Length: 144
Image (cartoon, rainbow, N blue to C red):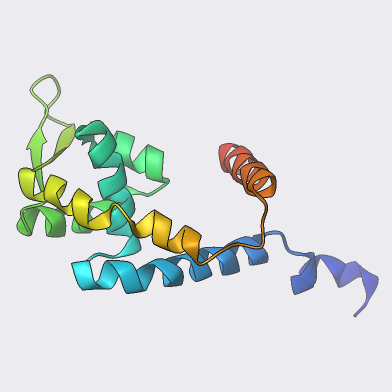
């Protein structure tokens, strides 16, 4: 390929290995989440709610780097299942507050060992390398 098209070679793309890793990571979680009726995206929503208990939709989207078009149907489904409630803020009716329910918190116990199970599968990264990758990925997220 002519040098003027080097930027189009897959091997020269930073985005591709990040994309491929993301897909592999989601696939690794699936055997643990599927029996619970959860997708990876629902799982990360729960992780935020288990930590914060309630959050507005805008904050949730910002934390998870998800847009309202992705979050709204997901949250409607979780509400229908009884895992969360959604309510308008009393201070600003344009803002929707998402709160975890007792049923949603009970799911936390069923998920508690998932990170450990994935870690037990092993990684080719040392603890130091994993920490550096984590730092670099968040640094990259800040600028894109």
